[in-house]
Length: 216
Ligand SMILES: NC(=O)c1ccc[n+]([C@@H]2O[C@H](COP(=O)([O-])OP(=O)(O)OC[C@H]3O[C@@H](n4cnc5c(N)ncnc54)[C@H](OP(=O)(O)O)[C@@H]3O)[C@@H](O)[C@H]2O)c1
Figure 1: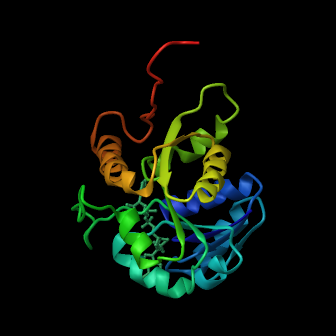
Figure 2: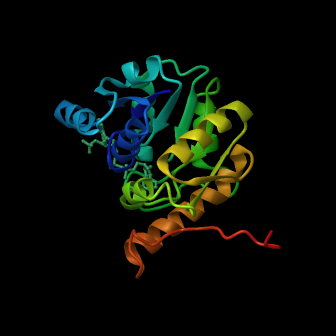
């Protein structure tokens, strides 16, 4: 697949690199320096290029949206028409200072995003994992036991595509249901961030759902 990265920071830079290493074509876009985008593309060790947000979105099968909420309007404007595109968002709805949750259980960042781009197909994924563990998960992906990663969205085919990307990064995808479930996964993601960066475990803390019920 071709994946356009909108926001090539901690999340976009790492996930884009891993998508390229897993064999996808990747266009890195939206950073404050073009040099950084070039370096990311070079270091990705796969088919990867630097580009503008418009170039990243143009022929993409999926775009990863990985910006702080305060940059959302700007990056969407630069990306242009996203009608029909699968948008994977890991962006969390925080205010300009990125300290307070702006939206709560009556909506979610993912649902607000879907209203901003009504003709796109939004899937919420990757927000519940600290970026620091992504390379480690990818390296361990052939082990029998993979960490689980929740995702949600309303369009079945887009979700299948995103589940494939989640698998390629090394996780076991767990379908949490329709997009409105982001009302619960986004605050959960903030809890994960709190534990990872301010708790005792650090980013290495592994987040894993155990299956309840009978063992086969
Ligand atoms: N980091 C995590 O572990 C994590 C985990 C789960 C969810 N999230 C969520 O994912 C989203 C992205 O987080 P992140 O940590 O990846 O953020 P980040 O490292 O700050 O990345 C944001 C990207 O946007 C770019 N950018 C910012 N202002 C810009 C401007 N004016 N013009 C062009 N580019 C600009 C940054 O450029 P530069 O590269 O030049 O700085 C960077 O590439 C956030 O909503 C966050 O809440 C993050």
